Length: 226
Ligand SMILES: Cc1cc2nc3c(=O)[nH]c(=O)nc-3n(C[C@H](O)[C@H](O)[C@H](O)COP(=O)(O)O)c2cc1C
Image (tube, rainbow, N blue to C red; front, side):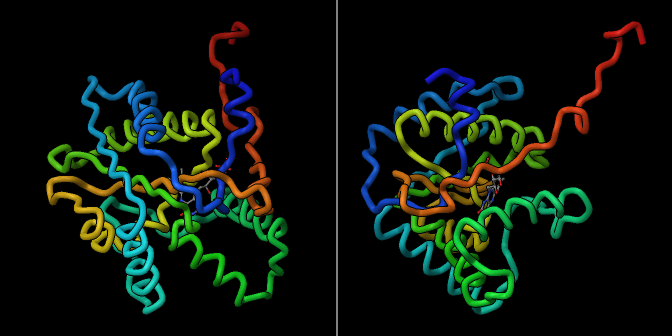
């Protein structure tokens, strides 16, 4: 698959087959992702690959705490609710996903169920928790580096028939993740990537989210004699 086709075809996957993902395939994908650039080649990233029982315990702990109304517990500063154009874009993709799933606007139960699926990392057979070395805090540049390596990872996964969804929901209760994935204290949890073979029957998997036209986000300076 050429690069352009890969980028155009990739989309987040939120319904998975239960089939396990071979460890050597995950090793290969990480090997490719590591080709990402990083500030001064610091390569601040760590990949905690989790499956089976420990992943079940993470899903359970994360879901129980969220259902009990616990505050989200992230290890990186988060912005909170989006507003304006960012909120509009958030709603746009949510509408696409709910339409695909046939979830009506006022169907509180199914909407809640969808949110819970997110806290379970969409029942994917594998989760990769992305962390970095805490000594780098304040780590804005490391966040950039982790974004780069994570995108490489999801693209490499796609070329092997694997779907992913990068998700903050799965690590909302970071202490639970830290405990069951045995993440050492000297690392900061950034996000996680749910991964597995896509269930083609799951209609939300077909959703192609939209992108803002270049005119709204690109400026050219010095090109046309201006
Ligand atoms: C940092 C980050 C966090 C995300 N967290 C979630 C999440 O918690 N739940 C979810 O369903 N999708 C999550 N996503 C996936 C985005 O919703 C998705 O990438 C976006 O809507 C664009 O769709 P696409 O990936 O299909 O192109 C996250 C993506 C990123 C990059």
